[in-house]
Image 1 (tube, rainbow, N blue to C red):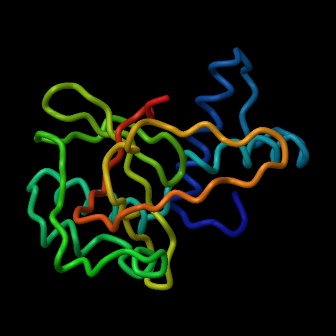
Image 2 (cartoon, rainbow, N blue to C red; image 1 turned 180 degrees about the vertical axis):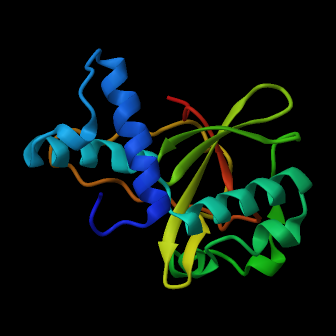
Length: 179
């Protein structure tokens, strides 16, 4: 029914489309919509249907985070991007995780997931697309140091602030970010 998508994605799209239509009190099924309406609905629903590869990857991430095993978690991280941004050698870094068990509660976006720790605090995990597939974004710290800095007014240049190299890494950041 949906050209260019797998059978699993096709089933997922139909399910979400019909759920959406039932929520807006329409008795019309997706199959009877015009091509223009169908495309608008399809684009709105695509974010809700992950591919089999991304579903498998996020389940691997879930298991690694539940185990708290540094080696398992580090194997899922984007170290290429970390090194490209000037990060230190990952083998020399200490991993920082919130108190476990960590449980995925919901998706914030197509590649962003919300986790809760043992204390009920929220943490965001972000995935990035690399040449080798999906990876977890490696962060130097869980929360920005000192909160978020106020930006310059107008066209003033952003003052350079020396950032000491991080001695830690984490796959999670506090959520929502502090102001």
